[in-house]
Length: 46
Image (cartoon, rainbow, N blue to C red; front, top):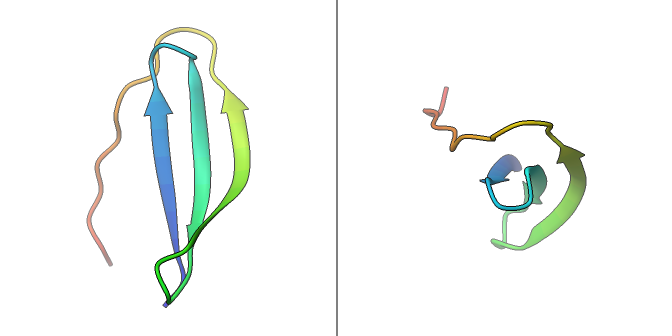
């Protein structure tokens, strides 16, 4: 199952969105500039 991974960086104020494939390879999908301080996110599989 393909999954989406989000990483947040308070230093750069950016959120990086990655696609994780079945072999474990990450591909950068999008970089989002987030004004203000970004916080780590947590989640659980459905």
